[in-house]
Image (tube, rainbow, N blue to C red):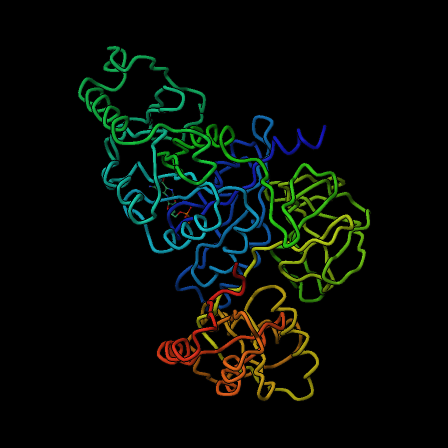
Length: 529
Ligand code: GDP
């Protein structure tokens, strides 16, 4: 098949939601349609369970599961679908942000009763900033929840989206009768069981037809007619271009648990969701249909088996084809590498694959060559943009607690940072190492993994840092900048890429610094335009 055809039939996306909205359940139902799994319960939740024996052991357990769920791929109606897993827990927000650099679109799951929750807001904001097309799925319609129109209002306001429903519920909770598909103009009745007969719908060409009254009862039919009239009056007509330009977000209703409304979502999704999109490298915009291969590492999984130094680097293919045993250029290291057993992902299995196409994810076995953000190409020098580091929330000095194991400690820290578990800052003044994390639990995870995977021991020491700021100034040699460096020398550090970072100890001191040095811009992200 030609490259163009393979590109056209690929959809690579992520499902984002606040924990518990139903992401895992929806993923599982989507896989059932692809025939990729046979039964419910096959997809393990990547959630951190509250009250587990020890929270950080729970994170380790989760890490094991998330290797299996990192990429779930399946075929449906001749479409190759790749679902990239995004942790919902806020301590893993950075992981999710990085994964969002590798998706071409997202489905946002909202719980009908809880409405828009905190993590949903954050994730949607990132998608909006990154211009990622979004579809909203309102889940748990089998339960009492918010009124359909109120919820659409809430989504528009809290998530700053412009929505238009493509399916509409007929009742909800105990009274859920079905959903009307505005895209296909048909009705699917809700039976309460997980619909096995997924193709059973009733076409309604004319809403005024009395057939509708017979189907759902006169009262519900009248309500539906009125509601659909309101939908038409209030919401813009769906058009694909606005959706792809992130100006319009279609909304679907359903119940993932009952596999209800999921087919409507999936069928519309494969029709409208974007095929692999062009991506910006520092050098130029790269189009998927270019024949030369290029891709980037967005995730690294390491040491699942502590006895082997096994790392799996996840590469999103941006352009061309990736072939087994062909040499590719690792741009940062300026060296050619060959991969004899690249993994492709199918549902829960991984398999060695000979050729992969744009939109696909390949897992490459790695002995320490890769960092998140690395680019691989057929030879061209390209650096893909868009995997920034965000300022951590928690900072601590890391000390060596076993002088005999200094080397192991250094190596362990280095590799865990490559994996993106946390960020390392080295103080300019004295070379002391500071670890920054998004969640406090990560410190325990790092300590545990250093000991179990590298045989090294560390201890932490508190350090008062409010935010890490990356800086930008027109003239790095100006009097003002040199003065800043002198006065703030105690608070300056280098990140792992060697970029200078200001570790502000409080919001107040950051504000004072900004006022005193107006020619320096301070950012909470490591990459800026
Ligand atoms: P995640 O944290 O977003 O992955 O959420 P899960 O898929 O694990 O779902 C959280 C809980 O909500 C589980 O107990 C599910 O069984 C339940 N759930 C998911 N979808 C539905 C639904 O459509 N209706 C109802 N009543 N419960 C649901």
